[in-house]
Length: 212
Length: 247
Image (cartoon, rainbow over all chains, first blue to last red; front, side, top):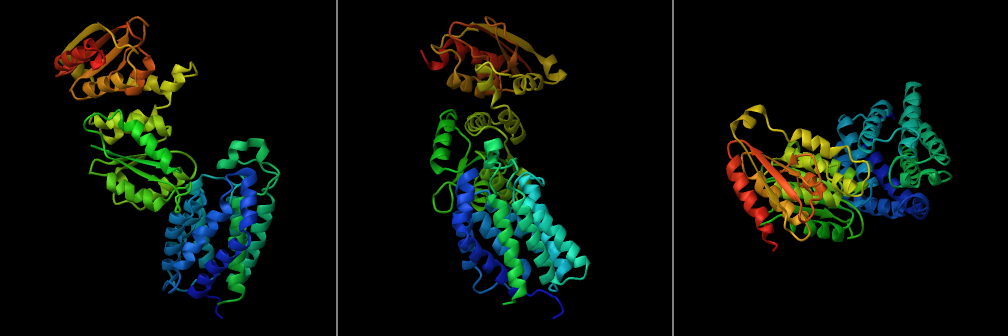
């Protein structure tokens, strides 16, 4: 393989993300009940079910796919993760116009998506949000791609970095979202958004390792 | 007239807040659309529904969006990307209920989008001032910003003094009537509570007027400058002396 990522593989990514969120739905909701409004697992599961319902027949191109995913998420999640994950995909689409989505192109699209999330949520690294998983994942992706890794290899590095970023949110005091109302009491809990964002990267790793 | 959109996690909360706002909207209130609740009627927000509500509320003069908290803000920001005319949409930082009331009254008076948005931006101040908390933010700006330009000031100036006879003073409803009336004239209307020794504030700002908290029996001075100053004062004087129809 030349290292190009097919639209089918990206569709498999979205399906794998839906499956992972369902698998961890109760955990996500439990994390959110500790420092938020206890709906992250069920909201994300509902939004991704609506997304997957629109993937048959599969969109013809990666930009079409990401537009469909983004528009569906902003409309059917319900909580703040709707506009945040929705924006991530809506920004990825236009950044990935070419058919030859290699590691570098996919990394650039992910970066455009995460920049959209940061612009929307105004969160910075260390605010105890999904950015704490996404931002180190991007850096790991780019480093791996610069070392010559293909997309599957870059996704492995990104998923590992996301998990480390997620774990590092535990001692942090939340500065964004509902959890920020808790102040110091938000420390000692993993951030639900960083946890689901890690599932997103792990789903990409799995979809690229085992192309559909 | 500009349109308004109320964005909330809860349909019930939004409907009730809009009802409260429209109580003050008089005969010709602005269009208010609600975008509230999650996809299954639960607590949540939907950017696509918000965008549709904005498009419906826009008659060409633009739309001001009032939001509750959290995802309502993020979804409203996202919705602006989907509307037909993003340049005609403003998201208000005002508190949801106070902002809606101020927006309905100011929009019903025919103010443009920028004016309504500016009025709503100070919507938290009346409560803060009433409770004696730190209040040197928006009202002062509204006082300073209310001054018309020098030309209008030179045209004609007139004033009257009168005693407020309303049993509850110049509370929200008569204050809204005053502001709507003052806004209809080409005149810079100013009002001061002489008994309280208050500053003179803009008669077009509901929130500034409510913040004065004018009590029954208080003597007020209303001053106007501009081409229609006298006509404005004649109608306002009649309203005040009539107790805004409350006697």
